[in-house]
Image 1 (tube, chains in turn yellow, green):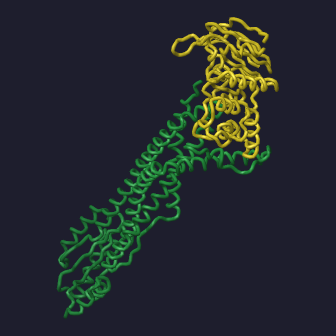
Image 2 (cartoon, helix red, strand yellow):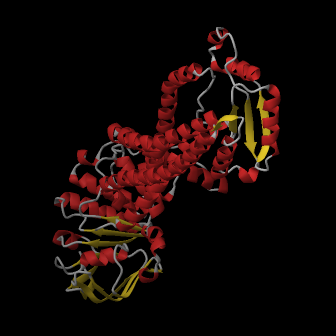
Image 3 (tube, chains in turn purple, cyan):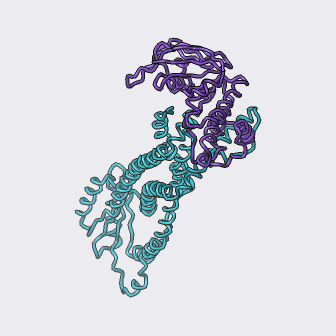
Length: 223
Length: 326
């Protein structure tokens, strides 16, 4: 479902973020992406979401080779990858409903179905009834969950998250991670970049550890 | 840009059939259409300013066009053919006048020579001049015999007519020769030039409208950058991101077109009374030519099209360059 094959990535400013990175995630697998700041975690996620293309090597997501994808095919590709950000990237001038419904509006989902699905997604993240609130009226944890609802509302087969718990206290972080695990339980492939030691200890999922742009280890760690 | 009409203004759902897909497509356009209108309404000052500039830019060539059209209408019945009036000496007897007229008619340059007696001349003058009562005071007819001469086609150029007039002046019976309609030709030449100017001004001002709309849309895009990035991030295509801006341009162009028509109508209403007074002073009845339905539609539709095009050009350029950061 996600396959990196000897991926080399150099940014236009000359920084080499990844070199010879290879790993593979099966459909429905969940993994933590770990490593120091600057090790290349964010670059891996950017490559999965096709915000960047590899300089060399192959990135295959949902059966599509991102290097071969035409520009016009990028939007359709991105609709099959849910992305959650540390700073959640919500539109502060729009209520929760509209933030969550945005991917559905893009997909052209009719209004009635949109209503139903937004409520279902908000229910999943425990925010049912907050449709009319604006993001800034919500707590950091709630904002993050709105971001997650937006990422999963189109039921993408792949869900990626970049330090989703970075700004949250341990209880909220745990809550958010439980959410990801629930999505994983229904078959979504989940990749979470994190360096939150507590989480790593609590969840028994695969760890892909990157050091200086290379795969350092890939292992399962018992809780 | 606080309320998301794209999402809110919506109609009942369609099913996943061809009809359903069409109604979904329509629904998305309806959402963009209403949404962009709502956004414009929330910035009334900026929107009205843009519409005013577009309206004035469209009204100028339209007004110039009407000026030319009206002047052509006024001068149309003066005819385009040059005519010479040959005034015979006083006194001239009827037989002398007829002889002179047939001599002129015999010339190869002359297509037609019509003799007008002093009595006929006086009657015509009385009917047209509006000073009939003053003419009653005259004890005798002061008018001469006149031969109205229409040159034959190869000899009706301005130079040929001048030459003919000079030759006729040499005739013994002739007092005065006037090429009295040469100025109509000059006027028509001027009007033709003016008409070219209308098209030129129209083209320049149309380009101006493109620039105005383009700049407005560029500012709008910059103001909604975050939204565009997030939309692209969750899979919004360029077409989806572009759509509200296209509608925005369309609305502003349409508003400008309507304003232009309004300005022209107001201008015509202001000019109508003095023009009517002027016409009646010359004993003529004259109604100003306004905009026909087709011209009306051309201005409004042209404004809308220019707005759409200006938005398209700018949106295509800028939206390509906004890519999500992560």
